[in-house]
Every structure is written in structure tokens, then in C-alpha cells.
Length: 429
Image (cartoon, rainbow, N blue to C red; front, side, top):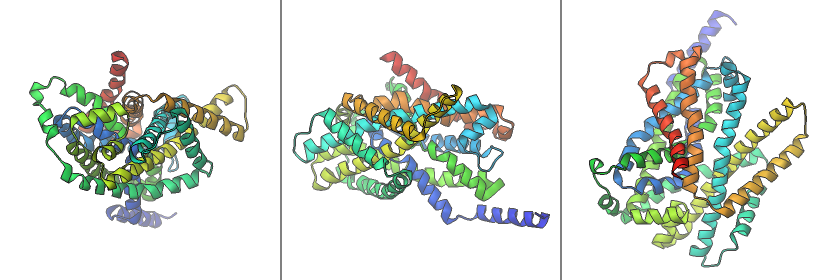
């Protein structure tokens, strides 16, 4: 390629970077859709349990926490020498094969507990709908749980492409209905949460409360699984300008994300009372299921549980793909180290059997969903999303240009806070 052709390609890339493209909108919405799902339906419960002050602090933290962490992870993927290298390959390039395997292990343990959580959530949502909306006696929990898990697994059998297309179709109506529902709740707003709140100076537990809420926030806004493919596409499309362009897309997506989710959180919390939120947590159901039972209005009675069911099903399918992929990779690499092999079909059947049985058992036992988020989901995700990119900035030559930024300190602190929450949860129990 001549110098003139190279210069023309660079000019074309710069022109594309300066203008907002249709593909940029697609990616911004895809990032939004990946983050906003079932986790959003549980955020208002913990956020509003302790009054208005933790919620106000959440509003201040939500955007920088989400934007800077995902931007750093994106930059880490972009730092790879190959334009086709995903996050696993970049980890191996920078830290070696052992670290690459460790990353796969972390990904699996970040996704698999959430899959178990969605099994509990879908069972509780269906059980609540049958009892409160349909007015019928729900079948035994073990039977209901296995029927729901097998039903979702039946969708899995159609293949990954069908699952991804199904999820993409469900995302956008979900977002629209979520915003409309937030507006619909405005006439029900009351000042119960304001009466419950005390001044920060008088509330010795506000920082403890915020500490335990942050892992739920991390989970609710997390879309790290799509960041790798997002970064690869931007690098292939924009070359050296990929960092600038991806940051631009992330910024707009996260502004939309935080604005709509926090509006939903505030609308739910202001339409209920702290006592109602405590009951929702005790009943181990999503905020939408509780709202449907609480207001008994025709629209909310049937629409709210339906939204919850769609959101949880979408999240279950998406996390199943990730958990299956992670477990498959772990098993293959483990078998290779012992010089053993197994047919791919047999391995997939074993993985599916393991997933069905484990999801069924946990859904039947019905552990606390919010507890699972606080102690399992958030901390492991934080290790990948917050701390790994910061370690890379300190150690990897390709990322040293990002050193000495205040955002790095903020991301590191948020990651440590999130991970420390699991230690507190283990000690307190």
C-alpha cells in the first residue's frame, strides 16, 4: 500500500470518527440493552430501603462508576497488538497463558452465580403471578422450578443465533415499557421515603448502607461481557481512532443508561414506602412483581409481571450462553492438560445436564436474590471490570499512556469497595 493510500485511509477514519454513524447508534443501544435487564428490577429495593441519602449518592456515583470502568476495560482490549484479539487473547498477550485461563475462570464464576439467581427470580415471579394475579394455587415449588428451567433450556436448543435474535427483539420494547411505567407511577408518588430519611450527619449507617448497595449497582449497570466484541469492532472500523470513538459511544450510552435507570428507581421508590420495599426483599421478588401486587390496577397487574418475566428470561438466556461458553472452555483446557479428549456433543450434553440440575436445586431452595448479587455477582465482576484494567495500566507498556489520571484512583477505590462487600457478607453471616 502506498503512502498516499495510507494517508487517505487515515483521513477517512478521522472523518468517520468525527461524525456519528448509524452503526454507532446500534452499538450505543446494544450496550444499553446488555446492561439494562433483570438486575434493574432489583435495584430499587436495596436503593430505597434506607432513605433518600444513599439514593442521592448513587445518582452522583452511577455515571462515573459505569463510564470510567467500562472505558478502561475497552481500552484494555484495544491495547492488543492484533485487531481481531478479544479480551482473552489480550490477557494472554500481556500476562501469559496462565492469566488467560484465570480470566476464563473468573468470567465463569462471574456469570454462573447470576444464572442461578435468575433461576430463582423466574420461579418467584411466576409463582407470585399465579397466586396474586391469576388467583390460583401454584404447583409445588420444585415442580414449578424444573418446568421453568426446562422451558428456558428448550429455547437454548434452537441455537445461539436464535437466542441472540430473540434477546435483541426483547430489549427495545423492554426499555420503552420501563420508561412508560416510570411515568405511569408518578401520580402514586408520596413522601414516605423523605420521612424515613435522616440527615447524613445523624445516620451512622449511611456509609455502611452505601457500601452494601454498590455491588448491586455494579451488577445493575454491568455490560462487561459485550465490551470485548465492542472494542474489537471499533478497532477494526476506526483503527488508531478507536479509543476516541469508543469513548464517545460509551459516553452517550451511559448517559442514557443512568438517566433512565435512575428515573425508574426513583419512580418506584417514591411510589412505595420503605416498609413496602422491605416486604419486597422479604418476599424475594422483583420490584415489578411487588408493584403489581401492591396497587392492584388492571395495567400494572398484568403488565408489570410480564415485563419482569421477559427481562429475567432474557437475562437467563444471555447468561446461560456465557456460562456455557466459559465452562466449556475450562473443561476443554483441563482435559487437554491431562491429554484427554471428549466429543463436543457429549461435553455439551454434560454441561446442559449440570446447568439444569444446579439451576433447579437453587431455584427450589430459594436463597435471597439480593444476597446472591451482593456476595457473588458484584465482587467477581468488579475484579474484571475495575481492577484488571487498572493493573494493566500500571504494568503493560501499551497502556502506560493512561497513567496518572484521577479516574484511575476512582475506579480502583470502587473496585476495592465492591470486592470488600463480599468479605463483610461472609463475616457477618
